[in-house]
Length: 453
Image (cartoon, rainbow, N blue to C red):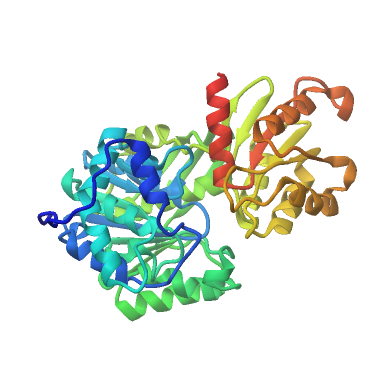
């Protein structure tokens, strides 16, 4: 990295100071579609993203789970990895991971201080200041270069072409299933959204495509042909051969680009996670590792975790967390509930962001919840529990909806309902709670529930 400017701002000394400095910038919900600021920033930092190979992932859902699987496979190959994902569940530092571990507080402060001297230079030269997300991307790329890592696994924040992460030219571009989300910024139909997300597919790369609708697939294939990228498509070059739900997850047989791997235990629930595993496997094969050893694949997938994705965080009653925040994600959760669990009653706790398709979420999950407790998270973007409750009554009916604004109280209310078989007229002991609707809601619930164990 280049020497810091002489008139550098005061450096941070604690994690809280870094968090305050980052949160004082434009939030992730405020966007000005352009790569100008991040390009200026990374130039000042000495183009750290050019010092390592990379794998870039976009799509509407599944990015974080797939990123974690890719990283686990790469680490099993003795490669040093960096991983950048967003948003975080509990702590901001989770977004930047090296060798499978989030930066500790000291490393997070150091990563911020390494780039902080340059942020005000970019602010002064550009029409708009660096955003929170752009600053985090610069921190991640600089930290990966300093480590140094062999390969970075990078998750797009939103979209693709103009997402700040897209200053990398990845060896492998991964496009997970595309549906409608962030319609205000990306468009209100999947094909339009695909045009934006296709921007991560670069000349000479391998494009690993999860199964898509025909109109989305056409956009992605056209982009790959335009830039001369090699295609690997789920259902054609690779895919899930079979899957069987099992205790603690599922057993899958995956057809990769170079071999088939039979009876692999995956400690995650749902057909969507089996598909993510197939994509992750093909991605690592496409990265250039060749045929993977069967035992290595088995051992790596057995270690995979994905917090906040149908994660069982407590028992008696069982409490699950899932960060589904759009109808497409909710459909995957609903299918997994049918596939892998037999809770009765299942009580929902939901807190959503005000800009999401709330009616769509409620409609998908309504058949699965005996009762819904509407709540809210602590961020200004959260829909109020009262407003969510009004929307929920239209879908569930008044008798199946409670409104409890405090998240901790909402979880307690749901747990009581799940255990009170007399109130819902089912057999005792089978009740459970699912907390869902937003990554932030699930992250805050996770912190609360971990503190109680």
